[in-house]
Length: 134
Image (cartoon, rainbow, N blue to C red; front, top):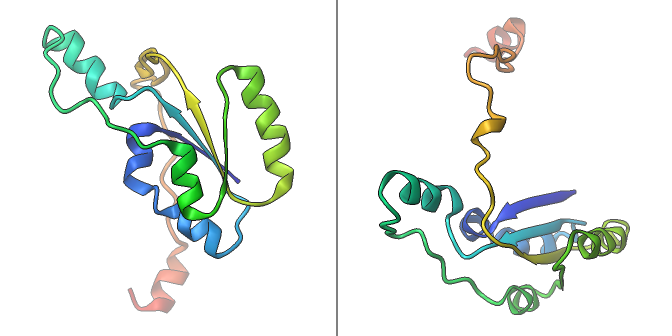
């Protein structure tokens, strides 16, 4: 399994590296790190004239962080390097943290299509709910 993260989001759940190590999970964790809460910073730039507040990050050394959890790490600077690291990491079936330093990401909002119908959320079958007494 592959977990793809920005550095801001990853900072909220990095303790899951411990779980991956403890249970021997083949978790490949990719952290694209730019040193910011990217979407927050973009909003501050566009709406508030680049008056930034609480959107900069102080990140750890991701290689040392992986070492602290007893898992492997790698760093990839280019898409080709990332492809090579992934080609080795996925079949190894052990936890690894891949650090990918990046520049500013473009806005993702154009990928979200407002007004397009979305499928209904998954819900349990009615007979299962009745049987459970819910």
